[in-house]
Length: 195
Length: 375
Image 1 (cartoon, rainbow over the protein chains, first blue to last red):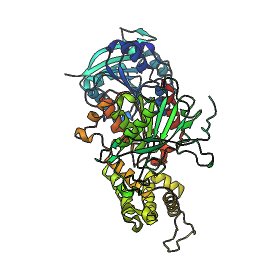
Image 2: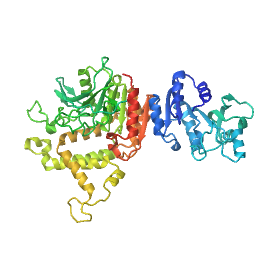
Image 3: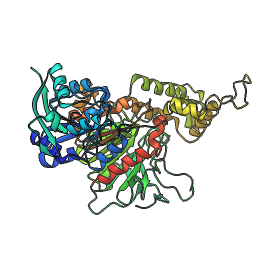
Image 4: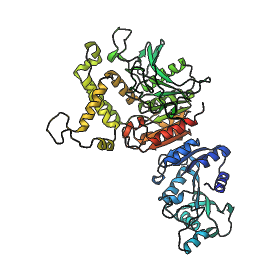
C-alpha cells in the first residue's frame, strides 16, 4: 500500500541518528525503515486504535494523539525532521498542522496526492470523481477531506511564509520534472521556516 | 494460539527479610515479611520475569485461585495466564503484597517486635519508593537481576515508574497504566476525605483498634464509597443505575431508595469486611506523597532522565481520577529524554476501573506489547 519511492525520497533527506516524528504513521513501516537504515530515534503519531496496534506489533514507538488539535506537549524544535506522508489531505486543520510541524522540527517533510494530476482532471471532465493509485478511495468512503494540487500547496506555502527547500514530484515511481502539476500524481516536499 | 486459560490453583509464598529497611519517612522496619505469588516458570537465563504491582486495594493474588476458594480469582486474572496478554507460557510473573498491606506482608496488623503488640498506628509511613526497595530485595532473593517488564495500574503504575528511576538497570520495560506522575490537589482531596472518614470513626481508637477488639468499619466503608465514586465514570454510573428507585417511587427515607445508594453501601460493606483501615490510610498517603519530580524542582523530564526502560503508557478516555492528561505528562517527559515510549488512550466508558477490565482494544495492545518483549 505504501509508495516506496515516497519512502526512498524521505530517507535520503534524513541524516543518521536524527530524531524523527512521523505524523499519521500508519503501521509504522516508514519509521521501522528509517530505524533500520538511518538509526533514527523515531516516534509515530496516530489516533486510530488499529494503527496503534500495528505500530506496537512492528516495534515502533507510537503516541496516540489527535493531530487536528496540534502537537501541544512536544517541545519547540525538538525533532530534526517531522514527516507527514500522504496524510495532509486527510486533515481539516491544514494550516495549523503545518505551523505545528515547523514548530516542533527543524524541517518538515510532506507528501500528498496531487489532485491536479492529468488522470484526475480527465476523470472530472468525464463527470466522475477520480479514483487512482494515489487517490484509491471512492468519494463516499474517502478519508480525505482536502483536495488540492501542487500549485495550490505552493501558493499556501508562499502565503504562510513556509520555505520550500526541495520539491520532488512523481508519477508511477518516476521523477517528473516537467509540468509536475499536470503530470505528477504525488509530490514530496522538504519545508522549512521562512526567512 | 490457545484459548486463554487460568493459571489454576496457586499457593502464596513468604519471604522473610532480616535486614532492616530504611524508609523515606525516616523510620526503619527492623525486619519484615513479604507474601507473594508466582505464575509460570523462571527461564534458565532468568530473563523472563515480570513484576505486577498492585494498586490501593490489591494484593499479591494477581491470578489463579486457591484450592479452597475456586471462585476467588486473582484481581488481574484476565491479564495473566496461558494464552492471556501476559502469557505465563513465556513469562515468569510475580505478584507481591506491599509493605503496610493487610494480605500477609508485614503491615499494621503484624506484631511489632518492640512491643509484642500489633503495630497499628505505629507502623511507619511507607512510600512508593519504599515498596519498590522492598520488591527489589524480593527480586534479589528470587535471583532476578533484571525484569523483562514491570507492570502496574493506578498506584501500581506509580511503582512501575518508580522502579525505572530507582533501579533503571533492572527494568527492561515499564508498563504504566491509568497512572500519574503525581496526584493533583483534587485527587489528594478525595484521599483526605477517605482518611477523615476512618480517623473520625469512634472505633478507630487512634489506630489501635485491634487492642480494643473493634474495627472502624463505618469509616472504612465511607472511605471506600467515596473512592468507588471516583473509580467510575459519570456515564457508567448513569447507565448502570440512573435514578432507579428500589420502591419505584420516593418513600422519603434515609434507607436505600436509589439503586446507586444500594450499590455503594454494598461495595463499602464488602470492602470494610476484609480490608484493614490502617493499611488504607498508609496506602492513600503513599499515593499522595509520590512525586518523583519534587526533588527536581517539579521538573518531570529532569526526574525521568534516569530511566532507561522502554515504556508503554496507557490511559482510559473516561478515567477522571487518573485522567489521560496525567499519563501524557509521563509520555512527554519520556519523549524529552528520547526514551522509547508508546502511548494509547483507550476508549472506555468504565472510568478508572477500566484498567482492571478486558476491553478488547486494551488487551490487544498489551498482548502486542508483551509479544515483542524478548526474553
